[in-house]
Image (cartoon, rainbow, N blue to C red; front, top):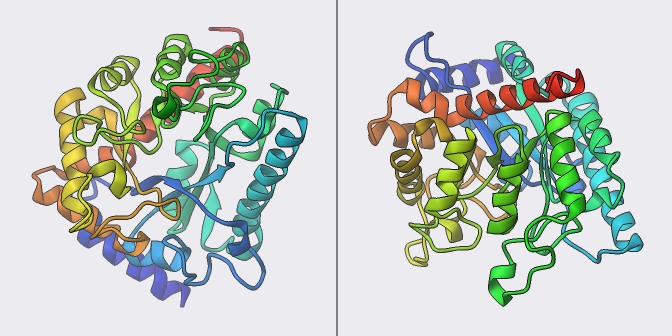
Length: 357
């Protein structure tokens, strides 16, 4: 059975992933939410669960790398809120660990750098990586940045839907109320520590002023793990042209997200791959192909007609080819750009830890 799955995955990669050995396309989805109830002995991602992402769907669609997201909803900024949030985050870290070490070590491994990604992919296995959506569970203890790094987190967003102790959220646009006018003093300290440990800073949820301050303070490139172009869909979660330019100048990457509400205000027919690739096209034209990537936000509200779940991942590659992208360009969009930024962030972190920066 495992041999059959590997052959199926390699066949999909040959047909949809890359047309020659010089242009390997490693498909990387930078934002996949999950529920810990799907990480148990009796129900887990080795099965074709009723979720948009699981191992059978990754194999069927040729999705190589899934960034599993340790997401925590914003709560009260007090000791009890921080403790509850911490318990939630640790449960999700533990769930990912069970997936790669207990349930499916023969099918998927955890990667913390680009070398890991290439090594695991070469073995024919799927790759898990860890992102943190909302640093709220860190509480007021900045030593938690190191703890998250040790658990495998390689990107962190400082806020979600609601202002955190570190950063204002984009949601302030709805009522005009902001807590910090960007970043708090603690948030500025966290930016430094994320750089220090080589963890990518995710700007997808913070406010525009907070994003500006992060980019000004960061010694390393940033990412938007799941955002699209505000010029095409005026939504606070998307990035406007000025913000796109900030990311270009910073050397970062914006992972275009396949969440319908961020792509179009059209309800019928619902958002589809054409809408999704329209956003990719726009940002490529605006800031260059090297600064654009791909994400789904599966099981967090994402998915469009043509890419409803991981089993349809090959359709994205097919659509990009229809739009005229070469395999070399598609390889960058699907993961090359993201891994380049990860390498740069980790190199800067290593220099900082050695006192060379």
